[in-house]
Length: 136
Image (cartoon, rainbow, N blue to C red):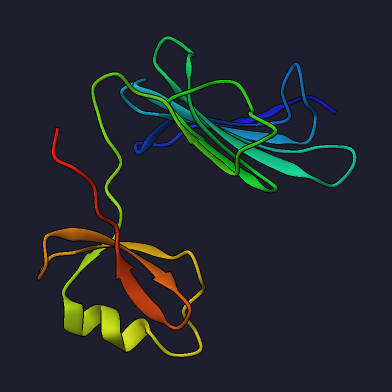
């Protein structure tokens, strides 16, 4: 079966199938700045890849991993973020908001930025512990 290609005013093109993977859908933006590939592999696993206009991988999402700003899967990481110009922002909340999470539903090891204290905190042993360090 030949690839099916659809075009409309919102996207540049949508391709079902493709030269390298028959179980894939590719969506390209109208301005050509981004494209998204959704593929189902023969083993039933799937992957979503986002490419920039130069066809560089900008992010990937698969079973058990999320990669941002890198094109390689790291078998030792669930989340990998690579950048030389940006940081990671974790959830920010007040002490009161964090305390509402402190019940049985909060997992040990959860990390937040406490905006009341202006400190990072980690959930350990049923409560929030401030992560402390010496200033640089």
